[in-house]
Image 1 (tube, protein in one colour):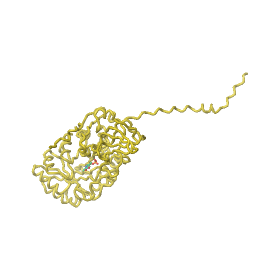
Image 2 (cartoon, rainbow, N blue to C red; image 1 turned 135 degrees about the vertical axis):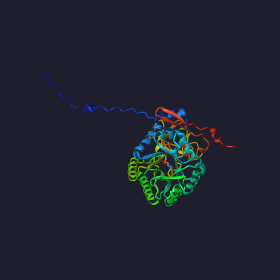
Image 3 (cartoon, rainbow, N blue to C red; image 1 turned 180 degrees about the vertical axis):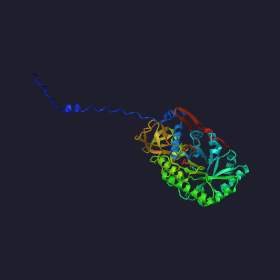
Image 4 (cartoon, rainbow, N blue to C red; image 1 turned 30 degrees about the vertical axis):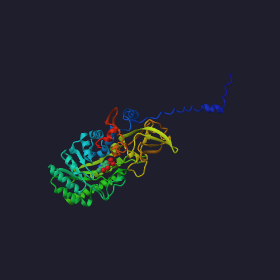
Length: 445
Ligand SMILES: Cc1ncc(COP(=O)(O)O)c(C=O)c1O
């Protein structure tokens, strides 16, 4: 009988072969380029030119739906047109269910052009003029938010002259600031709203004028509020004061506008606003103060539109100076002041990415600035975006609010950027690019 083969002693070589083969290193996956709707951002830049604002209708609808869901069916969400006076943006939000509030006659025109009924529009702002009332009241304006005793008299005069009865709400300057908001508009001596101790006089003034009908109260304590609890405390303070004044003054406030100012991350390191917490707290607050005749409002600009907009700008050229690489882009502070840090105390880069590789976190440091002759025209210092070259496209996220309209467009007389709206595969120009000759419009030598 043939001897059985002895098992071979495992050698080092065998042991290595016994280990299952390690997977071959995966090839580096190519970066996913930035898409807006169903379009590549770089294609949009090529097709429509730069600098370019791109608004995404689907994101606008999603933002409004999320807010509406969180705050519940008793709250009517008002779009603050000041955040972006785009007729197209305003129209998308109207169709999705938002009301609107305005702060000028120009914004009334935007509201009407977007299909809002004038009767649905609410007009706030500390400097309303007789001319504005004379134009807005015949159009059928819904409600005026009076911000001072003198304004009540002016409004009454305009309403009497036009033989109209005007729904009038009082904007209140609560003694407490809206903590947690970056830019506060009240809580101390302020040109916004009526101080609490003047409310009895203001109520009496509205009641004295048969042409005015007292409908409600309004607060707006500040913008970029990242503290939902602070927003709720502010709202609760108004509800409490409303109940006190109703009892003390024998009036009924049907409309309660609790303001808004929900914050949106706009610069590196910004936190997120806790919408769910704001919604839960607000539902409880409303339940405690609700009545069948009550109408509740929250007014939002940035939270609805900020994340729905992207600013695209193209690198004109790069250069080395003082050991740093600079990318000079064709868009600047005059078209997107907020992204250049105008209005912020501590300068931080905006959410600036490469259109071809938006998630890149490492790269050669580049300083990105626009074409203006001021050092303030800079979006970012030494961000790891490089290598960058002429014609590369950069994108600034969260540019759907306080973009062009917050910018000093007249500085250096460049044309204003075009604006396009994407909606899935659809795309259309919603604001034509300006012309270099626009600077001559209305001028006389
Ligand atoms: C009275 C009033 N309502 C609404 C807004 C919109 O604020 P945000 O864009 O922060 O929501 C502002 C902004 O300044 C405002 O002053």
